[in-house]
Image (cartoon, rainbow, N blue to C red; front, top):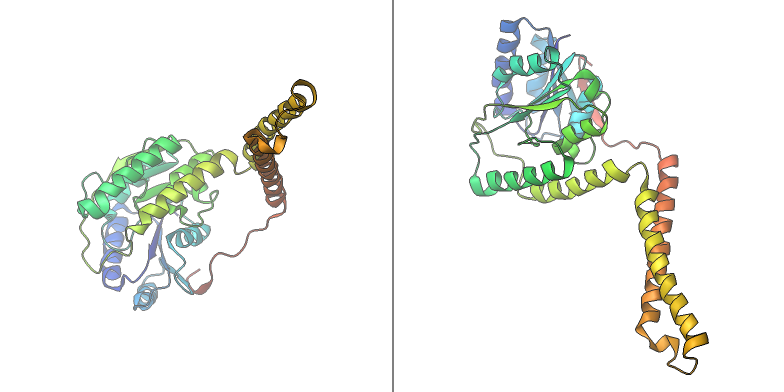
Length: 315
């Protein structure tokens, strides 16, 4: 199969038929073999009924329905596990991503040898204050932290080599950082392509300003995991050792001074250095134990179920 199109959605009943027709037109005009996988992330409207009708008339349409709203990352992760295509295209269901971009994205992966192509919505039709400005700040921080020179990490329109999606785990709200996850997994041929952005035609956006706060927190998380996720002792053990040594040096100095230099001086407990010593040794020990426990957890953890699927179509 040439292409798998993965579309996570939440309450997008009005746009699904139009999006389906548009995708099929592109696929047939380019003679691609394909599948369209809709992941209904707990919609409360009739989105699932629309997907079932589409699958009844076209076997290329497949669907996964979540029991409730688990989030875009869980939807993408579920879709990535089921896809069959050599190239995987992800896009949003709100018609803001153009299926006309699919041939160029497919060519970049299949013929130019890239592992991942991320869309860049250079010209946007969103609110400047609520979306554009926060997005620019968010992307600048992501570039600085990850080392990837991408302008739009959060663009839903992306293309992947099959091996990429089969070897990354998208959890929490990490869908914003799939290029970083791919890089950490060893896929380094990552580039971007300017894509068209269209104003929302139906409904309202499902994301608020809180997504940027969560995005920055997730950015810190993925930075930490990429550097120390497999070796927490390297961070916590180092910090703990440094702080313990500092505290021990203070304690040694105070003891040596009291015993040999100024035996008749102030009590050790009356000096601030004593409390600095006590605090740093205690905190250092706690850091060291945190790293030790982290290593134990990594070696004994088992993957937990992050979402529940209530229905499937053609899968």
